[in-house]
Length: 460
Ligand SMILES: Nc1ncnc2c1ncn2[C@@H]1O[C@H](COP(=O)(O)OP(=O)(O)O)[C@@H](O)[C@H]1O
Ligand SMILES: [Mg+2]
Image (cartoon, rainbow, N blue to C red):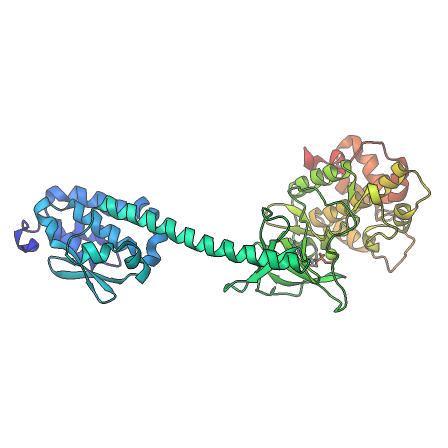
């Protein structure tokens, strides 16, 4: 039977046909034949709907099968379903070696080489294709679902077997993490002791600029993860630090040490210091969650000790804490505390290290240090006027005077007060002045239970 000769003459206006095929890059193939078949006016509406369906959600549903060539098969079957029953015989598929030919009325409209396992596993092309008839669309969909499930299963099983083996090997070597490098150039790490914990990877892509702190530098990063190594060749990371692990909070980017010299942490965005140096002004609302999280941390007895613009990152929405691996907990205050002289004061630091004082007093020094660092970073990032920016830059250079008190002093007071008036809650202006002027004294005098988050408007 020749389908085209039995069809009524073309009644679909040219412009309609053009609009149907406008975005179709297969116009000379499958859809060219499709239009030829359905040129009758009564089929026009149906054809239009099908065309929409194929190009909207239906197509999206099958997007995952594109690599196996199933999408044209589905389209082919859907189009076939639209044809009158006596026309359906005109739709055939035949196998020619590895190539499957989709034919309408004997004319090949599409060719595809299916992966051999599709053919082996289902034998559908061999059974049904070779004798020329197509399975029903619903059968094809079921088939595709089975095939997809099977592929996932196969991959997953092979992956699980590989993973179990690597985990066992790692456990035998006394390592916590099993690793494998994928073809994507990422090194994946699986926790051998806690199989349910999240998989992390070290990205293979190097950062565009050098990202380096005093102790470690970034060796690879992508949108999701950052991998860091110690700067000094002889240094290693502590696999299990002496401090209790930090709680999980939204703005806290805690690293996982996966090897002696590899640490992985989620990408928290670009360093805030970069923005301050480039005069990019941030909104105080971007600090809101960080302020709340710092308060939550402090309430649980955790302190970060080295909060500063270099250890904060902006992800486009909010400011996050990075470089948190030097954190301390009140249950074990260390003898030496990681700190940055520019963002603390000598007396504040000595207060943190002083074992003679009461635990509450010492905690107050730790809390005040974190808050002073975050407040300074916030002022640097949010200050608008050039005067306050200048005052900020000149206020915390530790090389000028190691024994200086806080950043705010008689000479620059007016600028800082301006910022406080804008961002501080009125009832806490005095506290903010005290914190910025002489943080160590503020640590001794501060009202119990008060946090930086309580003093600023940013937290509402
Ligand atoms: N989670 C992260 N997201 C984005 N960048 C990061 C992250 N962790 C570190 N970096 C970048 O790497 C630099 C060095 O890392 P950091 O942990 O601060 O090392 P150090 O202990 O040497 O100060 C940071 O200043 C920052 O630019
Ligand atoms: Mg750092």
